[in-house]
Length: 379
Image (cartoon, rainbow, N blue to C red; front, side):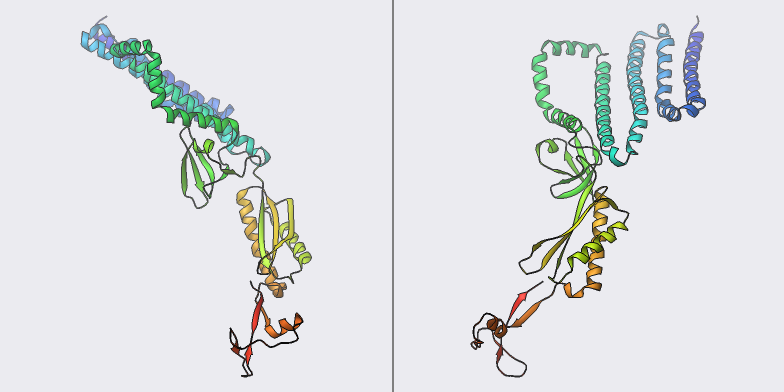
Protein backbone atom coordinates (compact mmCIF):
# COMPACT_ATOMS: atom_id res chain seq x y z
CA UNK A 1 0.00 0.00 0.00
CA UNK A 2 1.28 3.45 -0.87
CA UNK A 3 1.95 6.11 1.74
CA UNK A 4 -1.05 8.12 0.58
CA UNK A 5 -3.29 5.07 0.88
CA UNK A 6 -2.02 4.37 4.41
CA UNK A 7 -2.90 7.88 5.56
CA UNK A 8 -6.32 7.57 3.89
CA UNK A 9 -6.91 4.36 5.84
CA UNK A 10 -5.91 6.11 9.07
CA UNK A 11 -8.38 8.93 8.43
CA UNK A 12 -11.12 6.46 7.52
CA UNK A 13 -10.58 4.39 10.69
CA UNK A 14 -10.64 7.47 12.91
CA UNK A 15 -13.76 8.79 11.18
CA UNK A 16 -15.52 5.44 11.50
CA UNK A 17 -14.67 5.21 15.21
CA UNK A 18 -15.97 8.71 15.94
CA UNK A 19 -19.09 8.05 13.83
CA UNK A 20 -19.81 4.87 15.77
CA UNK A 21 -19.61 6.77 19.06
CA UNK A 22 -21.92 9.48 17.67
CA UNK A 23 -24.49 6.85 16.63
CA UNK A 24 -24.43 5.38 20.15
CA UNK A 25 -24.80 8.84 21.70
CA UNK A 26 -27.81 9.69 19.52
CA UNK A 27 -29.39 6.34 20.32
CA UNK A 28 -29.01 6.84 24.08
CA UNK A 29 -30.15 10.46 23.99
CA UNK A 30 -33.06 9.71 21.67
CA UNK A 31 -35.06 6.50 21.76
CA UNK A 32 -33.59 4.99 24.90
CA UNK A 33 -33.99 8.18 26.92
CA UNK A 34 -37.78 7.80 26.69
CA UNK A 35 -37.52 4.44 28.47
CA UNK A 36 -34.58 5.32 30.74
CA UNK A 37 -34.58 9.06 31.48
CA UNK A 38 -31.04 8.93 32.82
CA UNK A 39 -29.64 7.52 29.57
CA UNK A 40 -29.65 10.89 27.81
CA UNK A 41 -27.89 12.63 30.69
CA UNK A 42 -25.30 9.85 30.89
CA UNK A 43 -24.70 10.06 27.13
CA UNK A 44 -24.06 13.79 27.38
CA UNK A 45 -21.71 13.32 30.33
CA UNK A 46 -19.51 10.74 28.58
CA UNK A 47 -19.68 12.15 25.03
CA UNK A 48 -16.44 14.15 25.11
CA UNK A 49 -14.19 11.40 26.59
CA UNK A 50 -15.86 8.82 24.34
CA UNK A 51 -15.02 10.80 21.21
CA UNK A 52 -11.45 11.29 22.43
CA UNK A 53 -11.14 7.57 23.21
CA UNK A 54 -12.43 6.61 19.75
CA UNK A 55 -10.02 8.98 18.02
CA UNK A 56 -6.98 7.81 20.02
CA UNK A 57 -7.80 4.11 19.60
CA UNK A 58 -8.38 4.61 15.88
CA UNK A 59 -5.06 6.41 15.49
CA UNK A 60 -3.20 3.78 17.52
CA UNK A 61 -4.74 0.95 15.47
CA UNK A 62 -4.28 2.33 11.93
CA UNK A 63 -1.17 4.49 12.35
CA UNK A 64 1.36 3.64 9.55
CA UNK A 65 4.39 3.39 11.82
CA UNK A 66 6.52 1.89 9.01
CA UNK A 67 6.34 5.16 7.15
CA UNK A 68 7.86 7.08 10.05
CA UNK A 69 11.55 7.49 10.81
CA UNK A 70 12.95 5.65 13.83
CA UNK A 71 13.02 8.61 16.28
CA UNK A 72 9.60 9.79 15.12
CA UNK A 73 8.13 6.28 15.31
CA UNK A 74 9.24 5.84 18.94
CA UNK A 75 7.90 9.26 19.91
CA UNK A 76 4.54 8.68 18.20
CA UNK A 77 4.14 5.27 19.79
CA UNK A 78 4.96 6.70 23.21
CA UNK A 79 2.57 9.63 22.76
CA UNK A 80 -0.27 7.35 21.65
CA UNK A 81 0.28 5.02 24.61
CA UNK A 82 0.10 7.90 27.07
CA UNK A 83 -2.89 9.39 25.25
CA UNK A 84 -4.69 6.04 25.34
CA UNK A 85 -4.10 5.73 29.10
CA UNK A 86 -5.29 9.30 29.66
CA UNK A 87 -8.49 9.11 27.63
CA UNK A 88 -9.32 5.68 29.07
CA UNK A 89 -9.00 7.08 32.59
CA UNK A 90 -11.11 10.07 31.63
CA UNK A 91 -13.79 7.83 30.12
CA UNK A 92 -13.89 5.45 33.10
CA UNK A 93 -14.23 8.36 35.55
CA UNK A 94 -17.01 9.98 33.53
CA UNK A 95 -18.89 6.67 33.25
CA UNK A 96 -18.60 6.14 37.01
CA UNK A 97 -19.87 9.64 37.76
CA UNK A 98 -22.69 9.35 35.21
CA UNK A 99 -23.87 6.08 36.75
CA UNK A 100 -23.64 7.27 40.36
CA UNK A 101 -25.16 10.75 39.98
CA UNK A 102 -28.82 9.64 39.52
CA UNK A 103 -28.98 7.61 42.77
CA UNK A 104 -27.20 10.42 44.63
CA UNK A 105 -29.79 12.92 43.40
CA UNK A 106 -32.63 10.61 44.43
CA UNK A 107 -31.12 10.32 47.91
CA UNK A 108 -31.10 14.11 48.22
CA UNK A 109 -34.87 14.28 47.65
CA UNK A 110 -35.80 11.85 50.42
CA UNK A 111 -37.46 13.56 53.40
CA UNK A 112 -39.08 12.50 56.63
CA UNK A 113 -38.02 9.51 58.70
CA UNK A 114 -35.94 8.02 55.89
CA UNK A 115 -33.85 11.16 55.50
CA UNK A 116 -31.20 10.06 58.01
CA UNK A 117 -30.58 6.74 56.25
CA UNK A 118 -30.54 8.51 52.89
CA UNK A 119 -27.89 10.98 54.07
CA UNK A 120 -25.81 8.14 55.45
CA UNK A 121 -25.94 6.25 52.15
CA UNK A 122 -25.15 9.42 50.18
CA UNK A 123 -22.13 10.21 52.35
CA UNK A 124 -20.74 6.71 51.96
CA UNK A 125 -21.33 6.68 48.20
CA UNK A 126 -19.59 10.03 47.73
CA UNK A 127 -16.56 8.96 49.76
CA UNK A 128 -16.29 5.63 47.96
CA UNK A 129 -16.57 7.40 44.62
CA UNK A 130 -13.80 9.82 45.54
CA UNK A 131 -11.58 6.99 46.77
CA UNK A 132 -12.18 5.03 43.56
CA UNK A 133 -11.39 8.12 41.47
CA UNK A 134 -8.13 8.72 43.35
CA UNK A 135 -7.09 5.09 42.92
CA UNK A 136 -7.90 5.13 39.20
CA UNK A 137 -5.91 8.33 38.66
CA UNK A 138 -2.93 6.99 40.64
CA UNK A 139 -2.96 3.74 38.66
CA UNK A 140 -3.20 5.68 35.40
CA UNK A 141 -0.24 7.88 36.35
CA UNK A 142 1.76 4.79 37.29
CA UNK A 143 0.89 3.09 34.00
CA UNK A 144 1.84 6.21 32.03
CA UNK A 145 5.17 6.52 33.85
CA UNK A 146 5.98 2.85 33.32
CA UNK A 147 5.77 3.33 29.56
CA UNK A 148 9.19 5.00 29.81
CA UNK A 149 12.08 2.48 29.89
CA UNK A 150 14.06 4.55 32.40
CA UNK A 151 11.14 4.65 34.83
CA UNK A 152 10.69 0.88 34.52
CA UNK A 153 14.30 0.42 35.55
CA UNK A 154 13.86 2.69 38.56
CA UNK A 155 10.61 0.95 39.43
CA UNK A 156 12.30 -2.43 39.45
CA UNK A 157 14.90 -1.07 41.86
CA UNK A 158 12.21 0.33 44.12
CA UNK A 159 10.38 -2.97 44.15
CA UNK A 160 13.59 -4.66 45.17
CA UNK A 161 13.78 -2.36 48.21
CA UNK A 162 10.02 -2.20 48.82
CA UNK A 163 10.40 -2.25 52.60
CA UNK A 164 12.49 0.92 52.78
CA UNK A 165 10.43 2.64 50.09
CA UNK A 166 7.19 1.77 51.85
CA UNK A 167 8.51 3.13 55.13
CA UNK A 168 9.57 6.41 53.54
CA UNK A 169 6.29 6.82 51.66
CA UNK A 170 4.30 5.93 54.77
CA UNK A 171 6.06 8.57 56.86
CA UNK A 172 5.71 11.22 54.16
CA UNK A 173 2.04 10.46 53.51
CA UNK A 174 1.00 9.96 57.13
CA UNK A 175 -1.31 13.04 57.27
CA UNK A 176 -2.94 12.13 53.96
CA UNK A 177 -3.47 8.52 54.97
CA UNK A 178 -4.71 9.61 58.39
CA UNK A 179 -7.37 11.86 56.85
CA UNK A 180 -8.31 9.12 54.39
CA UNK A 181 -8.85 6.60 57.17
CA UNK A 182 -10.64 9.22 59.27
CA UNK A 183 -13.03 9.95 56.40
CA UNK A 184 -13.82 6.26 56.00
CA UNK A 185 -14.31 5.92 59.75
CA UNK A 186 -16.74 8.85 59.85
CA UNK A 187 -18.74 7.62 56.88
CA UNK A 188 -19.08 3.99 57.88
CA UNK A 189 -19.42 4.52 61.63
CA UNK A 190 -22.39 6.84 60.94
CA UNK A 191 -20.87 9.49 63.20
CA UNK A 192 -21.12 12.25 60.61
CA UNK A 193 -23.17 12.59 57.42
CA UNK A 194 -23.85 15.20 54.81
CA UNK A 195 -26.43 17.78 55.93
CA UNK A 196 -25.98 16.84 59.60
CA UNK A 197 -26.51 19.70 62.04
CA UNK A 198 -23.44 19.98 64.28
CA UNK A 199 -21.98 22.36 66.84
CA UNK A 200 -18.19 22.65 66.66
CA UNK A 201 -16.17 25.07 68.78
CA UNK A 202 -19.37 26.88 69.72
CA UNK A 203 -20.45 27.35 66.08
CA UNK A 204 -23.75 25.94 64.75
CA UNK A 205 -23.80 24.72 61.16
CA UNK A 206 -24.59 21.99 58.64
CA UNK A 207 -22.15 19.58 57.02
CA UNK A 208 -22.03 20.93 53.48
CA UNK A 209 -19.13 18.87 52.13
CA UNK A 210 -17.29 15.81 53.40
CA UNK A 211 -14.18 14.84 51.42
CA UNK A 212 -11.14 12.67 52.00
CA UNK A 213 -9.18 15.60 53.43
CA UNK A 214 -11.59 18.13 54.97
CA UNK A 215 -15.12 18.76 56.23
CA UNK A 216 -16.84 22.02 55.26
CA UNK A 217 -19.51 23.39 57.61
CA UNK A 218 -22.03 25.97 56.44
CA UNK A 219 -22.78 28.16 59.46
CA UNK A 220 -26.13 29.77 60.19
CA UNK A 221 -24.94 33.11 58.75
CA UNK A 222 -23.61 31.50 55.53
CA UNK A 223 -19.98 31.51 56.66
CA UNK A 224 -17.95 28.35 56.08
CA UNK A 225 -15.68 26.63 58.58
CA UNK A 226 -13.18 24.11 57.22
CA UNK A 227 -11.86 21.32 59.45
CA UNK A 228 -9.53 18.43 58.65
CA UNK A 229 -11.39 15.14 58.64
CA UNK A 230 -9.22 13.85 61.48
CA UNK A 231 -10.62 16.61 63.75
CA UNK A 232 -13.96 14.81 64.01
CA UNK A 233 -12.32 11.55 65.07
CA UNK A 234 -10.08 13.17 67.69
CA UNK A 235 -12.16 16.03 69.14
CA UNK A 236 -15.68 16.04 70.66
CA UNK A 237 -18.50 17.75 68.78
CA UNK A 238 -22.29 17.94 68.99
CA UNK A 239 -24.39 16.19 66.35
CA UNK A 240 -28.03 17.25 66.60
CA UNK A 241 -29.21 14.85 63.90
CA UNK A 242 -27.30 11.73 64.91
CA UNK A 243 -30.35 9.47 65.20
CA UNK A 244 -33.17 11.73 64.04
CA UNK A 245 -33.62 15.19 62.56
CA UNK A 246 -36.41 15.95 65.06
CA UNK A 247 -35.47 18.27 67.89
CA UNK A 248 -36.96 19.78 71.04
CA UNK A 249 -36.84 23.55 71.39
CA UNK A 250 -37.25 25.55 74.58
CA UNK A 251 -38.28 29.11 75.42
CA UNK A 252 -37.52 30.58 78.85
CA UNK A 253 -39.43 33.56 80.26
CA UNK A 254 -38.72 35.34 83.56
CA UNK A 255 -41.99 36.70 84.94
CA UNK A 256 -43.64 37.83 88.15
CA UNK A 257 -45.21 35.44 90.64
CA UNK A 258 -48.66 36.66 89.63
CA UNK A 259 -48.47 35.00 86.21
CA UNK A 260 -51.38 32.52 85.69
CA UNK A 261 -49.50 29.37 84.68
CA UNK A 262 -52.56 27.32 83.75
CA UNK A 263 -53.89 30.02 81.43
CA UNK A 264 -50.42 30.45 79.93
CA UNK A 265 -50.19 26.67 79.35
CA UNK A 266 -53.52 26.68 77.52
CA UNK A 267 -52.40 29.64 75.42
CA UNK A 268 -49.18 27.83 74.46
CA UNK A 269 -51.11 24.80 73.24
CA UNK A 270 -53.46 27.00 71.22
CA UNK A 271 -50.50 28.76 69.60
CA UNK A 272 -48.75 25.48 68.78
CA UNK A 273 -51.91 23.91 67.38
CA UNK A 274 -52.18 26.69 64.79
CA UNK A 275 -48.47 26.72 63.91
CA UNK A 276 -47.49 24.49 60.94
CA UNK A 277 -43.92 24.17 62.27
CA UNK A 278 -45.03 22.09 65.27
CA UNK A 279 -44.91 18.36 64.47
CA UNK A 280 -47.59 17.55 67.11
CA UNK A 281 -45.20 15.24 68.92
CA UNK A 282 -44.37 16.93 72.26
CA UNK A 283 -45.07 20.13 74.16
CA UNK A 284 -45.02 21.25 77.78
CA UNK A 285 -44.94 24.40 79.91
CA UNK A 286 -43.50 24.32 83.44
CA UNK A 287 -42.19 26.61 86.13
CA UNK A 288 -38.62 25.37 86.32
CA UNK A 289 -37.09 27.68 88.90
CA UNK A 290 -36.93 30.93 90.81
CA UNK A 291 -34.20 33.45 89.99
CA UNK A 292 -32.07 35.11 92.70
CA UNK A 293 -33.88 38.38 91.95
CA UNK A 294 -37.20 36.71 92.79
CA UNK A 295 -38.62 36.21 89.29
CA UNK A 296 -40.16 32.90 88.28
CA UNK A 297 -38.64 31.07 85.27
CA UNK A 298 -41.28 29.62 82.95
CA UNK A 299 -40.03 27.15 80.34
CA UNK A 300 -42.04 26.17 77.26
CA UNK A 301 -40.83 23.17 75.27
CA UNK A 302 -42.04 22.04 71.84
CA UNK A 303 -40.88 19.67 69.11
CA UNK A 304 -40.27 20.24 65.39
CA UNK A 305 -39.19 18.21 62.40
CA UNK A 306 -35.66 19.63 62.07
CA UNK A 307 -33.30 22.21 63.50
CA UNK A 308 -34.37 25.04 61.17
CA UNK A 309 -38.03 24.50 62.01
CA UNK A 310 -37.18 24.28 65.71
CA UNK A 311 -35.45 27.67 65.62
CA UNK A 312 -38.36 29.37 63.82
CA UNK A 313 -40.91 27.71 66.10
CA UNK A 314 -39.04 28.90 69.21
CA UNK A 315 -39.05 32.47 67.91
CA UNK A 316 -42.77 32.29 67.08
CA UNK A 317 -43.67 30.92 70.51
CA UNK A 318 -41.50 33.47 72.32
CA UNK A 319 -43.06 36.38 70.45
CA UNK A 320 -46.58 35.03 71.04
CA UNK A 321 -46.10 34.51 74.78
CA UNK A 322 -44.50 37.91 75.24
CA UNK A 323 -47.40 39.62 73.46
CA UNK A 324 -49.95 37.56 75.38
CA UNK A 325 -48.49 38.34 78.81
CA UNK A 326 -48.08 42.01 77.95
CA UNK A 327 -51.65 42.41 76.70
CA UNK A 328 -53.57 40.10 79.07
CA UNK A 329 -51.49 39.98 82.25
CA UNK A 330 -49.42 43.18 82.49
CA UNK A 331 -49.15 42.73 86.24
CA UNK A 332 -47.03 39.62 85.61
CA UNK A 333 -44.33 41.54 83.77
CA UNK A 334 -40.94 41.80 85.51
CA UNK A 335 -40.79 44.89 87.72
CA UNK A 336 -39.11 46.53 90.73
CA UNK A 337 -40.80 46.42 94.13
CA UNK A 338 -39.85 48.65 97.04
CA UNK A 339 -41.33 49.23 100.47
CA UNK A 340 -40.43 51.63 103.31
CA UNK A 341 -37.88 50.18 105.67
CA UNK A 342 -40.08 51.06 108.68
CA UNK A 343 -42.84 48.85 107.24
CA UNK A 344 -40.40 46.04 106.71
CA UNK A 345 -39.11 46.36 110.29
CA UNK A 346 -42.66 46.43 111.64
CA UNK A 347 -43.36 43.29 109.74
CA UNK A 348 -40.45 41.60 111.49
CA UNK A 349 -41.75 42.61 114.92
CA UNK A 350 -39.14 45.28 115.67
CA UNK A 351 -41.65 47.53 117.42
CA UNK A 352 -41.73 50.17 114.75
CA UNK A 353 -38.26 51.38 115.66
CA UNK A 354 -37.16 54.27 113.44
CA UNK A 355 -33.97 53.90 111.49
CA UNK A 356 -31.04 55.96 112.68
CA UNK A 357 -30.08 59.07 110.81
CA UNK A 358 -27.31 58.90 108.21
CA UNK A 359 -26.02 55.84 106.45
CA UNK A 360 -28.06 56.03 103.31
CA UNK A 361 -31.10 58.02 104.43
CA UNK A 362 -32.67 60.66 102.23
CA UNK A 363 -35.16 63.42 102.96
CA UNK A 364 -38.79 62.67 102.30
CA UNK A 365 -40.87 64.89 100.09
CA UNK A 366 -42.47 66.61 103.08
CA UNK A 367 -39.19 67.28 104.88
CA UNK A 368 -40.26 65.11 107.87
CA UNK A 369 -37.00 63.26 108.13
CA UNK A 370 -35.23 60.38 106.41
CA UNK A 371 -37.10 57.66 104.55
CA UNK A 372 -35.36 54.31 104.06
CA UNK A 373 -36.35 51.72 101.46
CA UNK A 374 -35.04 48.36 100.38
CA UNK A 375 -35.57 46.41 97.18
CA UNK A 376 -37.71 43.32 97.65
CA UNK A 377 -37.54 41.90 94.12
CA UNK A 378 -35.77 43.18 91.08
CA UNK A 379 -36.13 42.23 87.45
